[in-house]
Length: 129
Image (cartoon, rainbow, N blue to C red; front, side, top):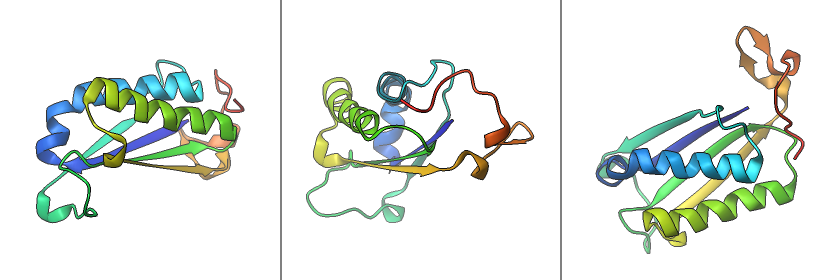
C-alpha cells in the first residue's frame, strides 16, 4: 500500500499534473514493485504565499511524500528515488535541485483500508522487495 502527496507552486504543478502523475506512478511500479492498478496520489498546488522554499530552488521546486507499508529494502527505496530524479529530469525537465522526496514507512497495523487493519488484508503483491 502506498499514498503519494505532491506539493508545489500551483502555476507549475497544474501545468504538468497529468504527466507528473504518470511519471511518479511508473517509478513506484518499477522501483517499489507496486501493481500497476495501485495508484494513490494527491496533488497540493500552492499559492506563492503558501509555499516557502530555500534559495537556489526554482518555481519548479516539488516535494514528494510517500507513505508505505514497511518492508521495502533499502535498495528498492534507493532505486525508486533514483528513478524519480532521472525521469523528472528527462520527462518533465525538473532537475534534481528542485525535487525533494521523503519516504515514511509504517507497520501495516497502522493503516485502515476497506474496513480492515492493514495487517489483516490479503495483498495481491509483495511489499518485501
